[in-house]
Length: 143
Image (cartoon, rainbow, N blue to C red; front, side, top):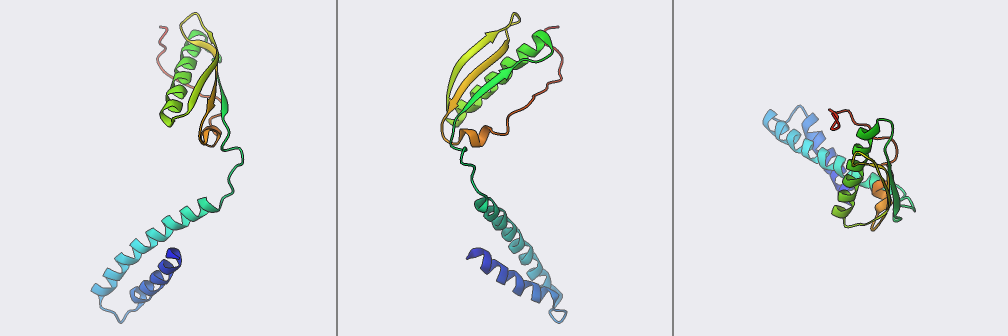
């Protein structure tokens, strides 16, 4: 309803702005209001698009989180530990249950691999795009 009334309002404002017989002050005021109305229309359209998208039926499920150190030796294992701890803090901040299933510590104090089960509201919806490789480029802690 609001979107449709905004379309009508924008049409009326546009007519006044385009009418050369109106005085410039009036046209400028209506043009400013037209910009505001158009911004609101754009916002409502983007919200509407999100609402119309079908939900993934798996969005409510939990996940098994696996973090593995890759090439890079002890520095990679330290980074893997930082990543695992970062995900743990993220999950706790979201109010999710974070259960460590297994860890394989490295000699440098990091982890070769760590697994956790995460459960709660919309876990998969929030984590489904987190797969893949995370790469770091920094001054090594081990030097």
